[in-house]
Image 1: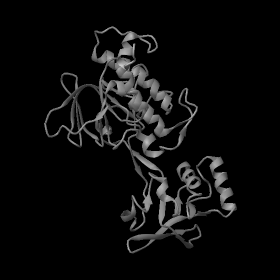
Image 2 (image 1 turned 135 degrees about the vertical axis):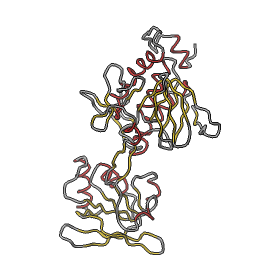
Image 3 (image 1 turned 180 degrees about the vertical axis):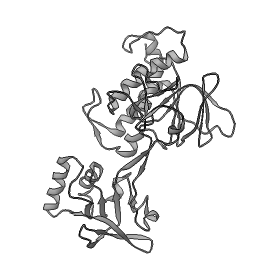
Image 4 (image 1 turned 180 degrees about the horizontal axis):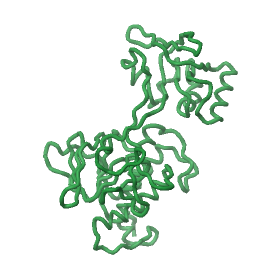
Length: 352
């Protein structure tokens, strides 16, 4: 498995059987299912690293509904999937958004990324989750200068927050999870939410309220009002309560969890049938309204759709057989089992 640089300089297109758009769990498992059938794939993702939502939004959160794994960290799941597809040597084109997509007269597909990489593909699988995520920003004057440092919309390295005066904004699971995780390490911690009711898990809310009652942290019903800073450093933030009163909180670190708004991006312009910002597919092939283009995972919709990782894995398995038939319609299909098939063992690199 390798990361592939842009081919813009050479001007040549990458010719491949399949391009998978999206390197989240469903996209990675799609590569595995295709590999079992002897079909090669290139993976393209706008993020700089594989893993999709799992790696970007909650790498440390546990997942409990992956078959045969009672508990699995989100990043751990991504790492396991990357290990699983190694025998098929997929090439990853990361940090690249697909901005051009067209079906050619011969039925193959032309794709080009913003980095200039072009593809000539026999089929395309869109496994882009719900699109790219953009954080809902703090929206205070001067905030932009601190974003990525003293103001963060996701926690990338919890260790650097130890000993900080932290103010957390938000009332969902991310806000409560990080409040509870960082509380033992912070110099001080305050949680600010715009209303009394929280959207987080009741158990997390109860634990937070216990910490407030014990005096280990503070919680305010308020909105962000203004930043305090001096000599280029964040010193604090003022918040406005529902009665209009303003209170100043000392802070050298703000964690903002106002949620994320997804952007379907260029996919919305590709002429594929959409339903509520998702790609409509059938449940036999998971093919979109355009033959040769398939969609798995959260990006698709059909009657009874459930947005679960395990559902996406099922979709990827069926899509792989449909892709094989699309690429090689004259070839007879056989269902072979990885436990007994010599062909499967050879493709997986299983020793004799």
